[in-house]
Length: 610
Image (cartoon, rainbow, N blue to C red):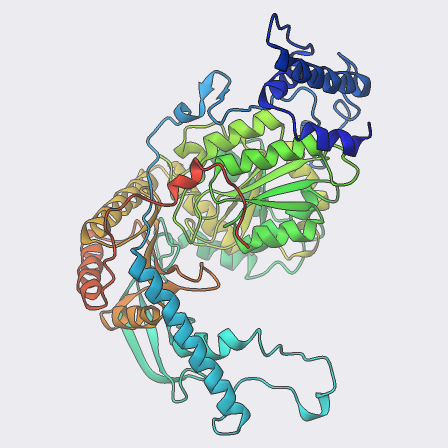
């Protein structure tokens, strides 16, 4: 029987037969069975046939080829992904190292994804139908010359060329986004602290172009910036060391780390990051987005498998695509969906050849910036150990923002940072600076220093930016001799819980974990996106509104980012405005109904939507 024929035959085996096969895979011998009815004979025969095939291909005690020699490209410890030696659980509630999946959390894990009433969904889709219909009408009027065409068009001499601007692809931007474009890209003219100053602008052509009025909107409450710990500040005493570095090193490095751009401050920062995270080594990069997109291709390539959460950030998606590895997507934070893909990857191997994958890399985020949810890290680590995979954890929004001392979701769950193979984070949010880092074992970091495109070709971080990160991180760690950093972490946690609790009581539908400082408030109906942002700004409150394609088409939302720098008076002012505006725009959709999203964790059908 060929491998393909064997694979098809194995797919039809009963569960009892699979238990026998897996018992052999785990223990190296087939289980003995006494008695049994006549209908069990073909099952035993099927199990014996598969066990014999496994014996012929791998031997009863010797490892499969590659199990001993396969080493990851990052130079770390080898974790082969072949079938032998791997326990494949047939039950969703199987125990890992004697601890069931339901009890591996050391703290409560509460997330809310309440479903909107049916009428809201109907009105949302009806709104898009109406807007799309008027969009086609406008396009018809433009084609007839009855309405001025402001959108970019092809030049007459290039009409025979392949179109540079795809008309259909720009339909959404041209007819829907432009109508509410004034709610994005608003220019601020101050530090993005708990309050900021905003330059007023108006449009005379329905948001196609803008002009500044010269007026400044002062002291707008900032509910949109990722200033989680409040380190985006202009206090002269706090920025004294940053100013010193500016005078000593200047504003730029003008070289890469591998050439003439490796400063002593870079080394100091990397050692501090490694100490802060509790790992062997770390490496800093000048751009957070490039930290993902340029380093993932250095870790995996052709013959490797990437398992990516469906709501991962675009930097992770781009890095996965650039790597050349095979990509498979699992449902958001759905452990059963992830395990299903892991089982299939281990059993079937690579397409066509059926060889074992060189590596399996699981890509997840600590806090998902559009959902406010926190990764189910303990369960993912359990699956990683079970199936000998690697975990790449993006802590862009979680480092500094969660955990008793601000060390991210690893500390939040009370786990060992060495359980995560690749720790990634950014300095652009909690630390009020720019750039990102990769941390983990020394072999991993040494490998990336040579093979990372970002290390080889990107300019180094400027010394004043590095000093800002160092001073903020030392403050959080208490190395500045004070407890101000710890007070900021606690203030953020208190503000987050207070803000979320009040929104729930007011009747809004909000997404995410109760400890996540990212708070999405659902607006749903597209016409309310612009109305909500404009009326909030009229109340001197700056918010971020998000819609399709950044979110599902029926889940437009406002995203609030809570900061430790927010005072209780600021949050109360925002909540009072939300209460009033929620009644005016009829945004209080909550019916305290059972959440639809947590059911994803227990579902048995894992087919992704197109």
